[in-house]
Amino acid sequence: MSVLACSSTRPAATPCVAGVQPRAKPSRAGPITASLRVVTPAFRRADNVQLRSVRSSAAPQGRTLGATVEAKNVALLGAAGGIGQPLALLLKLNPQITELRLYDIANVKGVAADLSHINTSVKVVTMGWQSGVSGHTGPDELGAALTGADLVIIPAGVPRKPGMTRDDLFNINAGIVKTLATGVAQHAPGAILNIISNPVNSTVPIAAETLKAAGVYDKRKVLGVTTLDVVRAETFVAEAKGLDVVDVQVPVIGGHAGETILPLLSQAEAAALTQRIQNAGTEVVEAKAGAGSATLSMAYAAARFAESVLLALNGEKDVVECTFVESDVHPDFKFFASKVVLGPNGVEDFLPLGELSPAEQAGLDGMNELLTKNIKTGIEFANKA
Image (cartoon, rainbow, N blue to C red):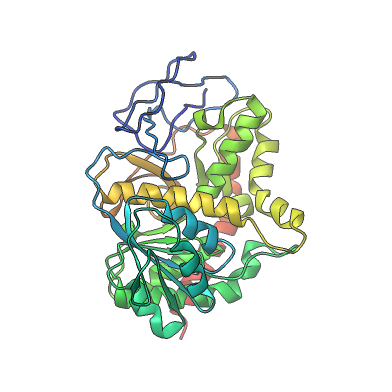
């Protein structure tokens, strides 16, 4: 079985072929077809879909647009936090964005002023003067940050500290996400919503139920950002196999916490790699010794996912990412992380999981209790009086 080298867009399905072919150099003029496939018996993809890789200098591991660009308005809620600030910087570099609105309960205007000095093409307004970024502080300004947004990204919430799990964050972050989702329902009901706030396994159902109660829920548009699990899996696999990380893709399915994180690997080393991917967030929290969590890598992953959403909004075809979303991919779970095709309205199609190895099937079966509990907790929180 194999790992297929790729990025986040795909043409028609083609069978995997063993061997390594020379890879075309990236072009800024338009999309290119990935011509390198790394095939080893150690790792494999969940299906035989060949993806094409296109690059751009404007975003992390980015892709040059194959569609006409219609720049979009993006609202970042929680922009002054540890993830929000570096994510705001990366979004400021994305030419697909017309206006970047930054929102937080405090300190966001300084972040906006700082970013506004960066000479990119992002056009924004800060409190009435042309600068490049708008900064909104406090609940009274949430509507202004959201109105007219095409994409809303939520990294708001408290970070993990040593000894904490993502589930420990629930009591604080659940209320934050519900409040912000209520604002989205009121001021940007048609926007695509990217949720970063942990625990994603519960906060995505909270947002979904909140929007549903307001009568504006579209399950295609409420997306949990699990891209960091994919980024970590690709990094760790590349390190283990001596490959260029750009040429590796590893789908990660299930959820975004502990044993619910299931990278699709198949080999004797898979157990150790899977465990490291599942515990990678704790590794960073402990390394920072109480000074924060995985803020920089999460910001990168969120920017990569946002870029894919924006590409799809602009009409780019066959944009593929893993995301935690309401789906029927697995009959036991109402929400599930898997590979999807993104389109102008959010999720356009769900890709099959493909044949799982015995170890992967065991991992999928083993997450049932925890993931079901996480989802139920989120739904119950959203619906309580």
